[in-house]
Structures are given as structure tokens and as C-alpha cells.
Length: 577
Image (cartoon, rainbow, N blue to C red; front, top):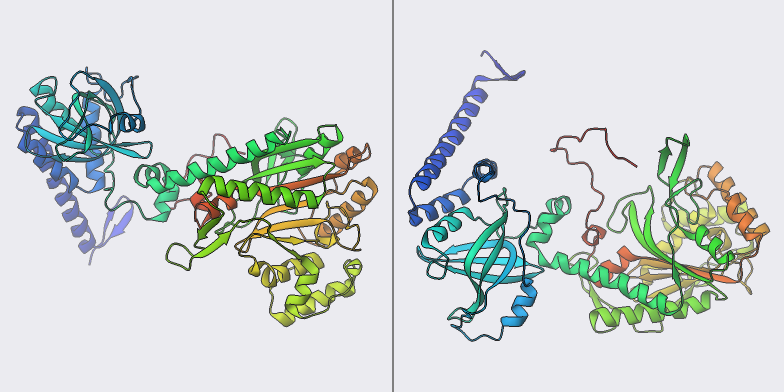
């Protein structure tokens, strides 16, 4: 059988026939709709128009887009510009509902004329001279009851209703009223197309459930799913509460650099970027900690910052490469003070936002098991090494020997024996971290402080005042996930330099998450950092708990996504990090 070539692609005869048949069918359908458009232009017969609108809904999305775009293009340059510069709005939909909800069924305030605007979600005809639109915006719905009797002219009424489609943003000037069934409505004198929707909007009844589409086209998700808006309202309330709490305690909000010569303040793999003018690599910040402590050295005793951090690590249900944290540093405080502050902050926040101390959370999604998380203070407190020993029924070497090779081998063997995986490099710190994850963190459903980490896991924390080899540090876990990390800060410059050098050694052995030596920070410490405690919290994870979201993508407007293979790759030119 001979093959035919189409656009350089070899096709069999059967495939060629199939494609030609499909193209002919699409062309016939398009021609049929075009005929109807022409008929509709020539006549103001509303039933025909309604039939056309209904027929439009049965088109495939590409045909719909093509026809709607042509119709909108035809309006450009006319008196009916489909993209007007300004439309004055008298009342938001929320305010309209609040102000006129008291009306009685059948009321119409003919002496009140005002304007509102929103997006059309539904269009229903009830005969030739009465149409209903569902107008949505700000998370609320208002009905538009368009009847030709009330409209400025019969001809304009027919014309505008033929023009508007689901998804369009429209302005409505008219009277407040209620239908005989008691539904609050605006009865239009005039309607204006403010911005057309060229695509076929998914029906609200079926919604938008595909997660890929929801995250890639967040605007569509927000148009169709009101619960999404509510999650981001909660996120905003969390940040507002945090700011207010810290401001009232006399903290100063600061901003520190996001591009650094050395990525410091945390144990993580950084993103690298390049500065043309300086001809050098810079690192996107992984934490603002070292700058904050320099500010405390400078005499600003209480500082905080809410901002983005960047870590070049995996993407999963609780990790995104860029994420938001709140960090604060408080002179003349220690980690005991911060535990009390954390209890007060979180319990107060949860109560204000949700109305009580208990929240329901589904870690495996809405269909999975529900857990009740109780934020009533005080929170449970456990010691990392002592409670890990109890949980595993094993006696550990003394914490002051944790930097020896014998101890590293002890924990290496223990991980093998207990089936705990730890990819290389298998340092004592990493092995311990994996054991804590598998045996302690899993017990933390209600808020739990895991305290007193070994020094080898905490290169910036101050040594424990009564237990050698440990530090004055805590992490707060909720539903097995860490949301806070805090410690009494190490303020001895000599000791700090030694710990940085240990980290540099670990980096040389292949641990690319270990810290760099930061000489600038060590020099600042030499001028004297007062006894200080520091604290950091992940805003995204806390938002997950307070919105019952088991995926971090649900609480980020635009989460990191792999490139969509079906979309053309954007040009390399342009802005980049």
C-alpha cells in the first residue's frame, strides 16, 4: 500500500482518509454555525438566537473559541467596544446583597438605579422576553432578571442578550428587586459587555476537578471553585494574625537580601543564580537567619520577617521549591520563652480563625481518615534522644560522643537493623534524623514539641546548659509534620566558627546540604550578640492544617509544576532568575 506524506509526516491511506473525513465533518459543522450567525444577523428572531446559543454549547471547545473570537473581533472599532476602559460600579455584589436582602418577594425599587458588575456563570431563557443570568464575584452570587419591559428598549434588549455568553464579565445598571419566589435580583435597564470570555467555561454544576488543570490554570479554578478562594482568605488571616501578634510585642518587621554570596542559616541545597555585572554566582536565600542575628548585634532587639525562601530540593505533598516562612529573633529570651510564645500564638490564632481550638484534618485527602487536631495549650513536650531511646528500646551512646566515628557506626547499624532507609552520606546527623522521623515524628498528631537536639544536628543552636552534647532547640510537629523550629542562639564566635568548619568537612564528604563557613557572620558575632532566641515557622504548612488541605499546592496560588508537554516551550529570551 502506498503511503502519502502530509507536512513531512508519512500517513497510510486509511489514516489519510480518516483525517480528511474528520476535517470535512468539522468544516460542515462550522459552516452550519456560520449560516446560523448570518441568519441571526439578518433577523431579530429571539427563538433562533436561543437555538444558536444552545447549539454553540454543543460545539467542541476549539470551534467555540474560533467563532466567539470572530464575533468579538467584529465588535472592535464599533460603538460597542467589547473591552471598554472603565465601568463605574456603585456597589460590590456583597454589599448589594447585604443592603437589599430585606426586600419582599415581588418588590422592585424603580426609584433606585445602581450599577454592579461580575462574571456570568449561567444564562437561562424563560420565553423570548425574560432571561435570567447568574452573576458571580467576591465569592457570592446575584441573579440578573432581564425582562424586555424594564429594559431601555426592546431592540437593545434582544441585541445584548444575543451578545452575552457564559463566562463574560458584564456591568448591569438597574433596579434592586426580588422575584415572586423571593430571589434577590437586579432588574436591568442596561447591560454592558466589559470583557468577553472567548473560551467555553466549564459548567458550575460539573465544576473543575482535574488537579493538573486547577493548578496550571488557577484563574479558572478560582472562577469555578469558591472553596479555593476561602483557603487563600484563611492564608491571609494567618499572616495578618502573625504580624499583629509580633507587632504588639514590640517586634520590628524587616527585609533582608534574597540573593547571597553564601547560603546560610539552614541546612539545605540552594539555588544558584548568576550576576552579570559582578561576574559571579549568587545563591537564592535558604533562610534569613544570619542577617537577623546581625541586626540584633546592631541593637534591634526584636526583629521578624515574613518572606520567601528557596530550596533546590524535591517537590512533594509538603514541599515546594519556594515557600513562605516567618522568622523572628528576640534578645534576652531563650527557647523556654519561645515555647510559651508558640503555644500562645498558635492556640490564639486557631481560635480566632476557626472559632475553637480543635480542627479536623484529612492527611490522605477528603475520602481518607479524619483526625482531630487539638491546639489547646499547653502542648506535649518530648526529648529527642531520651524519648527516641524509650520508643526504640535501645540505649544510645552518650550525646557528647556523637561526633565520633564509633557513634556514627552505632546509628548506621541501628538503621540497618530497624530497616530505616538513609541515602548517603550516612552521617550521624542524617541517620539520627531518619530514626526520629520513623519513630518519634509519627507519634505527633496533636501539636508536640520535640526538644533538645544533639549539637551535630544544630550548628547554629546554643549548647544545652545541663546536658552535654545536646542543644537548647525545639521543633513543633503537627500531624507528623514540622511547622516550627526554634532555639537559644549560639552567640560564642569561636564555637560558631568551629561548628561551621565541621559543616564544611561534611560538605567535602559529599553532604551538599551542609552549611558554608560564613566569615561575615562570625565577624558580627565578635562584636557581641546578646543572649537571644530565634524562631521560624512555615506558613504554607500551617495553612494546610487550618484549611484541611493535604497537598501544599492547594495553598499556593501558583505552585511549581513540571512543564506541560502539550504546550509550546516559551522563548529562552526574557526575564529569568
